[in-house]
Length: 418
Image (cartoon, rainbow, N blue to C red; front, top):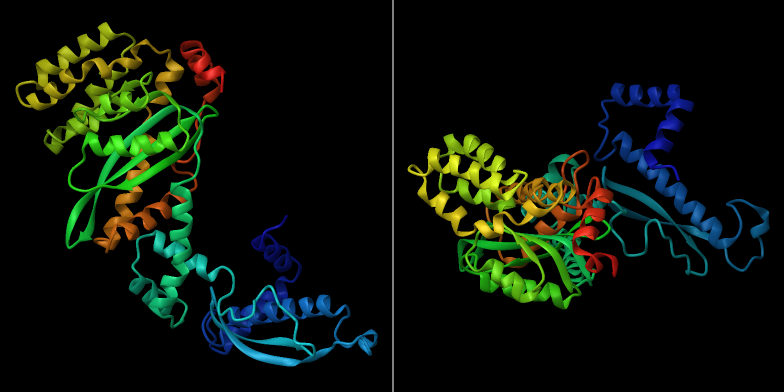
């Protein structure tokens, strides 16, 4: 099926002189492309009215002016004028009517004041973190459209319903990898405060990555709250997780194993970021580089030797980093026993780092959210709108065939008996 852009390109190639003549005439007459009396506005009016006439012909069973319509029992009965909001601005169109009054157009439904695509524009702006007031101002400035905040709110109301369904959807029975993380964003709760947003990302046995759940907590991040969210994931269908990746939060590995006793808990994937909290920014590059050498070692003994060198260089300056890694060492070397295909899946953090970056970008634009629901709506829209040619949290995991074969060899019937 061809897209609108492809059809427009074909039409332009076939009628390039006509298109150029239209643009030149618009320039000579001082016309804008969009807005009242704009060139594109006129073209949208032409297309919409043509489509409505086609719908009426289909409804009546004969074309306009066709003698076959005589005595058919129903016929055209003039038009009614209506202004609709489109992506190029307000467009005044003539809606054909029939004598029986039962014509129900689809392209511009009865009582509708917006053409399909206009609500999507509002939702796209909302997903980028703009407030309802900012969206209102943007539409007025760019499209010369005066809309109320109530209209913008109604356009985003469907997002709340979609979010509720998304948060309760059933999940797969087994996940190869579960990566959990937490970020902080500003939400008003009486006063504006940093609140934790808990995020769970999963890779299923088909190699598909997705955000499985997202929750706003209270106070600081804690294993008890994680226990609540992990139990919810289990209740939604997850009966087994092969490998769970998390940071070094005290008590978190135990919470994971309380929900899924057989799960291997791996910490070092996001432990590097945790470690950087204790270090001056000027040293982040060197520390991250050396810690990566630790968790990419081929064996546990080699990892121990590399960490000893790291401790010798940084231990006196940053003892908290050393204590964090030593305290969680048994969980940070879990994947040392895994072959390379599994390791690549476990310690690749680009997907969740990319997601967190987009979350922070959307929240910074807002400054703060008025409540938890408003925050979750925007973050949900971020998830639902992946960026082309960028690392995204949703999608297919690369080189998955190698990884799943290695997982099957290591975990046996937990993988093969789906």
